[in-house]
Amino acid sequence: MLVAAFLTVLAARAAARYTEDWPSLDSRPLPSWYDQAKFGIFVHWGVYSVPGFHDEWFLFDWLFRQPPNQECVDFMKRNYPSGFTYPEFAPHFSARFFNPGDWADIFKASGAKYVVLTAKHHEGFTNWGSPFSWNWNSVDIGPHRDLVGELGAAVRSRSLHYGLYHSLCEWSNHLFERDKKSGFKTQEFVAHKLLPELYSMVVTYKPDLIWSDGEWDAPDTYWNSTQFLAWLYNDSPVKDTVVTNDRWGSDLRCKHGGYYNCEDKYTPGQLPKHKWEKCQSVDKQSWGYRRNMKTSELMDLPTIIKDLVETVALGGNYLLNVGPTSDGMIPVVFEERLRGIGAWLDVNGEAIYGSKPWRIQSENASLPVWYTSKGSTVYAFLTAKPSKSIVELLQPKCDSSTEVTLLGHQGPLTWTPISADGGLYVLLPELSQSVSQVWTIKISDAK
Ligand SMILES: *[C@@H]1O[C@H](CO)[C@@H](O)[C@H](O)[C@H]1NC(C)=O
Ligand SMILES: *[C@@H]1O[C@H](CO)[C@@H](O)[C@H](O)[C@H]1NC(C)=O
View (spheres, rainbow, N blue to C red):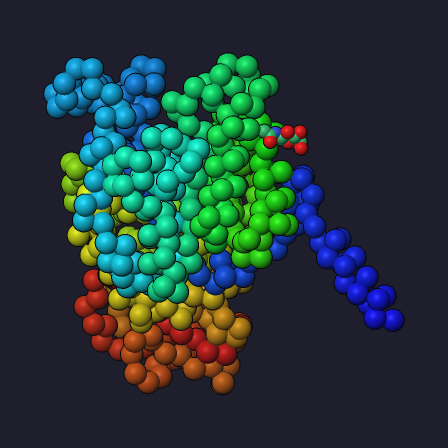
């Protein structure tokens, strides 16, 4: 009997193993922490933070793009001796003010539930002492520190999840260039650099999320993505908790993988069937730090909060990016935005965290309204200051047990039904001047 039961358990386990193909890998349920989290912080930090100009594609746009970006070429001519090479930026990636605890405090205060750091961007520089990236990593050169490990420890000690961004392609890797010339028939780069490094990164840092990128040049069969993901989901130390995105081979975005990013800053027009994430950057022109950014080029707080609300109403997670300086500071203007989101979430977070999309995502009677829900509670976000003290919500169906409140305000609000078919008029209290310009009406017991 016992042996039979044991064998049944073993068989069930064996049956639950994922195979190296998309139908099997796509069938894996997304670990639940991710959908509940809703809001994360993205951090782009690397050697590109040293020129701190143009964006994190600086190397590519200066030297590899055809024709090269003239702004980058001129910037180098004006500011650096001729013959200066990109690797010469690396010793100036000092991280001298980098205090991982300070960063993690800011991220925690933003109300984010996860943090995703660029462990390796397309320039190939690893922010940890990768033995597969000799002399092109943050321990051999520049900071002489394990940035991935240090930030991970600080973030996790504040109960935030920790994810790693990882680029499959590398712009100036000669093995990758050779494979490319063969039409990706050879896998020298994949066999000797990419996979050993990626497996080692997972085993060493046990990321809760792998934000894959740089996949566009080659199919998943070149990157051996399905083989890697089968290992990740079956046998890796993070097999039960890890979440991944959809950038694992050319033409796979929005089709295969864990959750979908689709394109950068992508917003679907209506509620998607599949879990997705919108990545967005406070600096609208760059993911990496730019020394010459201007206030007018940044997202302001109300715009960020509206974007977060719209994304969550449409079933997505919101991953908001900041680019730290090469000496390890989060620019104070970014810090101010993040603390502003946190202050808003302190009041309105119950309508965001752990919420589900409602049967209707938005309406626009008196003003643009977005909805989320939790059981029989419906949350209506007012994304502009109402011009009158009575707002009209057309979609919720209420009855005598319905109670209406405003998050952050004491006591119930007066309301009346619009018609027998549904809808309600809500009498608002005096709205305090709020820098965020988004208010949440909570409707308990509505359909
Ligand atoms: C990629 O996967 C195939 C099929 O399992 C395998 O034959 C090949 O050796 C793998 N390549 C690398 C570089 O790991
Ligand atoms: C809401 O309606 C107003 C007035 O008709 C219109 O100007 C505005 O663009 C609408 N907003 C949205 C988000 O649909």
